[in-house]
Image 1 (tube, rainbow, N blue to C red):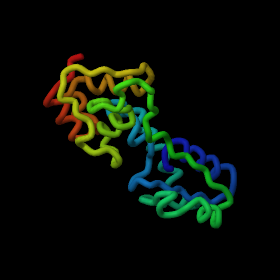
Image 2 (tube, rainbow, N blue to C red):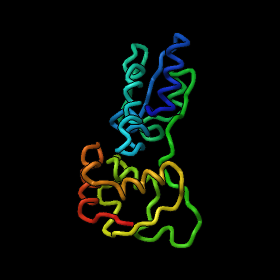
Image 3 (cartoon, helix red, strand yellow):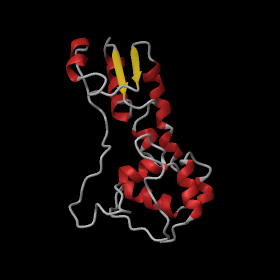
Length: 178
């Protein structure tokens, strides 16, 4: 990964040792959750990505983007060329709640909704349909609050963020009121 956990780990290695660091990401861009998991209206939090530039550009860092461990390279290949492997890949999948109906049409896990409004490459632009004015968000953590705030937020204020164009168009077409 190249998100916060991987970047902090790489930075620690680069500043406290003479290690060379290879950073591998299956996506074509760096940043992990800072890029794809932070709500678009939290620009200050997204600026954390600027801090990781030092790590990405360090002369002892090698970047490998669009490379998927398990598909393009396996664990044994990595160990053959590195002293250690750190998996810092985030949580891309939703956690099933085990409640009836959670797999019905119109029910989405937070990774899908967050990926939808952040234009994550794993989430199709048409994956989330909000053609309704009432939405239920189950949860009360940071991500649940982000989702509720994005769905109920001022669409024109969101237009000044890096929200995905398709999400902005959907919010303009059917504003969620509840």
